[in-house]
Length: 363
Image (cartoon, rainbow, N blue to C red):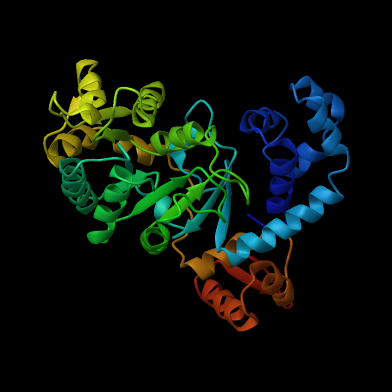
C-alpha cells in the first residue's frame, strides 16, 4: 500500500485498537482515509464508543504524528503492513468470521502465498512428540505445504525447525507487536524464519505478550491454514483452543494419538474421539488436504501480487497513485538512496514502475 494509505491505517489502529471495532468501520469504506473523514454520527451508528469517536476528532494531530513515527520504525524492521484489501493478504484468513483488519509481516513478502498447515502442541513436549513433529513437518514441507505455528517452546519450535531444515516455508504468528519477541530465548529461530518465511503479528509496535492476546493469535494460526495438526496437548490447553477455533472456521483437524499413560497427550485422544483425523504419517494429511487445496486457488484475488525480493517489494508497496520522488522514497523506506534507486531500476525493468519526470508511480 502507498505511504498515505498506510499512515491512515496506522492512525485507525492506534485510536480504535479493538479489531472488532475496526471491522465495524469497514462498513463505511475499505479506504482508511474515508473512514477517518466520515461523520461522528456514522461512527456512532456503527457502534463505536465515545472514546474512539473523541480520538477521531483530533486524528490529524498526535495520532498522525505517531503514525509517521510508527511507519519509520516499521521500515527499519523491514515490515510490510497488510490490510484486508491488499493482494498479499492471505485469502483463507479473509474468510474467517473475525479476520484481523491489519497484519504486520516481517520476512519474505511472498511467503503467505503458500497453502499452510498449522501445527500446535505442548510447550513441555516429550522427546517422542518433538520427533513426531520433526518427521511429519519435514515431509509435509517437502510436499509443498507451508508450516504455520506460534514460535512457542516445544512442539511449535520443532515444527518451525523441521520446515527450515528442508528449506521449506514457515510462518510464526506472534502474540506481540512486530518489534517484540516471545519467547525471548528464540532470537536465532526467529532470525532463521525471517529468511525462509515470516513473523506475522496483528498487534501494533510495542505490544507485549499479554494473556488475552494468545487466543487472538491462535485464531490467526488456524485461519491462515487449510487444517490444524495437534501433536501433543493436555485436556486443558491452548492447543485445544486452536483446534476448536479451526472447527469453527471449517478447517480440518488432525491429531497424533498418544499413550493413555501420557497426560500431555490426552487432549489429542479426546480430539480423535470427537472426530479429528488420526495421523500416523504425513500421507494421512496430504491425502486429506489434497482434495481441498484447490479451494485456496479459488480464493486468490484476480490480480496476483508480483514476485519481488524484499527490497523491491518494500519500494513497490510505498508507491501508489500519487507520484513520489527519490528523496521521499528514501526517507519513507529507511534504505540508502543508492539502494532505493537500484530497486526502482529493477522495478522499471519488470514494467512495474514508471518514471514521470523524475517522479515514480506504479506502472
